[in-house]
Image 1 (cartoon, rainbow, N blue to C red):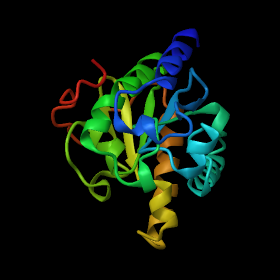
Image 2 (image 1 turned 90 degrees about the vertical axis):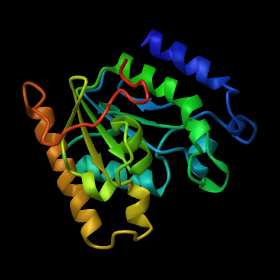
Image 3 (image 1 turned 180 degrees about the horizontal axis):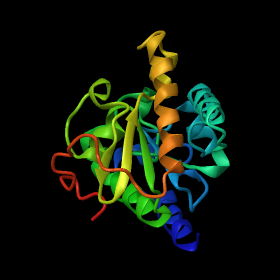
Length: 205
């Protein structure tokens, strides 16, 4: 835990991009530092920026409910975002912001060492897969990235916005059941789809 605390301390004073000027708190991550399952979202929102914790608003409540559906709690998993500071107006992350912040995520993954990573939405999925791809094309698939299983799914906020009414929630529940099954396996399963250039952004190096 000490090494992860050291990374969190460095992130708390980070001024590597423009987002440092507008933040209330750095949102580093929360949960079990030895978790087998790690979630990676996009960026903090309004409530996360105020509290300094990831996924504490409405999207967080949905994530908590989905975890409960597979008999897990937030304390058993680790939850983080690609960006550690809130973009103004919850706009999409800019490429230079992702570049500045991604080393913290790389360190989190290395130190927590999860067997399974679930990416929530397009930005986290594209970053960790190292390629541009729409979440609707890859959600629910299993990718083998440097010995870890990566499962993309929708971002809870997209479900709440009604971006995928009806089917979206059912698909997320299906993806979470897959996560539970993967956690119950003795060893990571082989990939169901190839990963193109997973080292493109230097992750897991």
